[in-house]
Length: 337
Image (tube, rainbow, N blue to C red):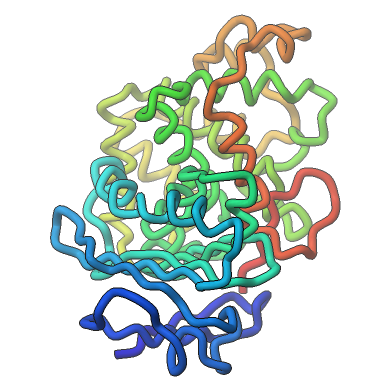
């Protein structure tokens, strides 16, 4: 059985994973992963673990190049938690949209990760500083927000990246390493009004800023503002309902705004305009309405707001989709298709 993944043109390749679903755990070499036709492979074959299944019975298959060197332990410590992450995300986003799950780490020199359908790709450099489950959370979240529900156009990238980043904030909340609100406060405080961060409009960032860090972090701020506006019950209903309503289809930012207004019964256009489209830092009244802490609103707030424990791990994924072709300010960068 072959599982074929079409990777964005930035990689200019079709990856063919030839791992039989019924194969025994252990080493896989040529043919298949590790063969010369597999452009992201290492040269020494793969160690494969697929003895795990989710609570819903989905098979989980993870593969690691045998020559990962010092990154091998951290990669395994992170990716072997894929089952746990996916089961938690089903509580947040609803049923997992596919019939298989896993991840793979080839021995390559790139630094990015990519949400290839059912089995994300992770470069070894993602684990150069140790285990980081946050990158796994980000890529598995994309199975709902990015893969099952794809964007109408790349200007709608917030629907992918804002939600994947916010899933990292929710994971932090679950792990007791800082609530999403605390991460929102800290993010807002790091960017004064004259920071170019605020000039990027996550709802339509333009081709040069399509994967700017603002699409991720300001995009997540928009979701925290929405959460505070509509309340916990409605907010999490929205997170689950959207992937169900648009499963295996395409949608745009306007569709999400209308959906959120319909489900919540509230006018929300002004909120989304403030956080997704205004090319400036939301002023204190709007920020206060979004629930940001008083310290975060101060001009000297960067020194006053405590950094959540999860911040460093989350920030380490800012280049999670950087293919190395972005050298300007603040790009989390990835250029799909």
